[in-house]
Amino acid sequence: MIKFLFFLKKSMPFLITLFLWRMSVSFWNPAGILALIPIFYYTFVKPIDWFVLFGLTFCFLIDYRCDLPLFWTTLFCLMYAINGFQNYIDITNVEKNALYIFMLFIGSGFFILTCVGGTWNIFINNLWLFIWMGILYIPITSIDNALKIKGLK
Amino acid sequence: MTKDKLSYKLMKIVKSAAAALAVPVFIIYIMVSKPDYAIMNDLAHVVLPVANVVGDIITWPVRIIGQGVHWVRETSQIRTENEILRKKLDEALANKYACDIAMDENKKLEREIDIKHASPYSSVIADVIFDDSVFHHTTFLINKGRKSGLERGMVVVSFENRLIGTIIDCGSQFCRVRAITDSDSNVAVRVSGSGVSGFLRGNGKNKASIGFFSDTQFVGRSGLKIMTSNISGILPSGIYIGDMIDETYVDVLKPNQNSRVMVLKYNNMDSYN
Image (tube, rainbow over all chains, first blue to last red):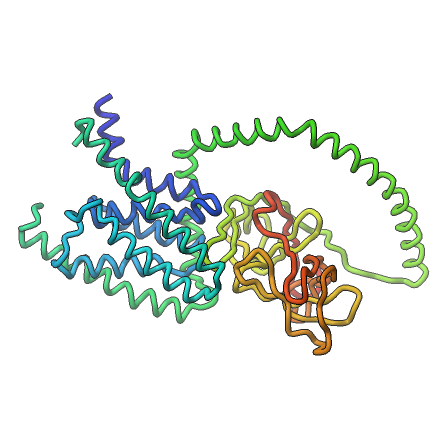
């Protein structure tokens, strides 16, 4: 049982990402965009070995399904590069699991997409997704902490 | 590897440099490869089915519960729906007899004047597996692809033969369809019962806007029927799209209104395969 829980704990980041991507529903999770939450969290806040490539793959899949050629993939690489080259902010120690940095990340993406779309309808849709992803960030990233409490390190 | 070690720091810089290098590569690719994105699409044809299968395995309990809830809800509505359908069936049967007579007369007249016309005899039925309406794009995935003989550019219609969109990318077992409400969609249309043609443009909303009429004096009005026109040779002519709501907007079919669609095997030369 412990072994299974240990395996679950290790594979949890990958499972959550896959789960959120696959459970796409229009309006609540269009094109599985909520998968950006674990992608961001397990790449920048609680980095896991090899998760970067996995995250990159799922950014690509989100882009493919959103019909946005390499948009989030490029943004993800840009964020990764900026984070790697700077040592002013240590994202791994920022409070609230770096919620505000995550919102800055998705916010800049939504801002660009709103400018490209250029209609009120798209602005409202993007605003909704921005707020919704911000709200869900803490509960989704708390799954990691919840497993730690049970003594699985 | 601790954070203070030199090798860790060096590794971090190397990874960041690789990511930084990828950014201009991606941007150049986006600009150069437009609008086909062949490499990206080919890669997606491999990665997407794999991710889908693994995702299906992981999410099956949730999806089964979801389907169960859906089934219970549908079952509870069946009695009411049955009564409504019976009424509609009676009405439809009454209409059918009148139609049968009209069709026979029509065939007779066609024989007399020797009319020959193409008919969409080849089509593929597919299920909508993902509705990916997000941002200013409205695309969706269907569960049939090249193995079923589908190709990029083919037309997707509802079972009422109403236009939904066109295939923009085709994998071996799935296709990505651009709906007519997508902001990149621009369809040549004509106003039924008149010689006026124009263009129907999606804008990411639930309705599409129509404009660039061939007759500059023409003003659209509510209730006019819009059909495809085949002016640019991209779509077959005569497919019903929707009714005009006002002088600018047309009420079109949205992807989320269909769980199953038909793909017409159209070869861009005003004929069907």
